[in-house]
Figure 1 (cartoon, rainbow, N blue to C red):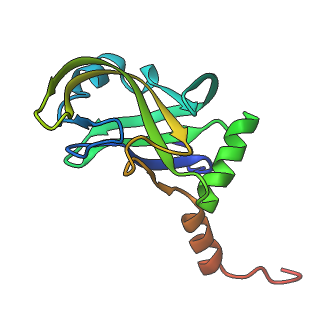
Figure 2: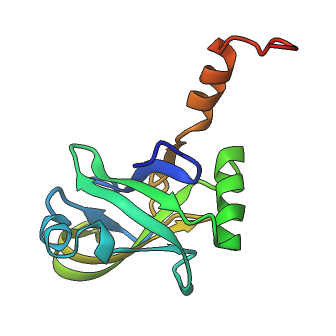
Length: 159
């Protein structure tokens, strides 16, 4: 990483054990084989699940105790990515949503589908995530830059 955090963000694209609005419940380990096979470079970052709208790259994708933790970087050479960066920083856009193919699932008596294995092929920034808790946690960078500006000595005229 080059130290420039513009366009850089983290979040959770899926939360384990939490039903989404489509009645799917992702189980821990559901992404493991897909992440091993594809790695972050094999999972596309899209806007609104539109394959014509790639907007950046995933730097890190991993399962932790909470869910699928993501770290991504928007490609600010792309106009849509610059717009998304501004919206994320303003707090106007923070949804994440996964695109996948189900490889293993079991239904329960309440009508939920428990996903035990999925082939993850894309994660999108979205306005309305199917899993309400799947969100961008924080854009990275401005607080670090703002802190550096505050603690740096003020420039002296004529110095």
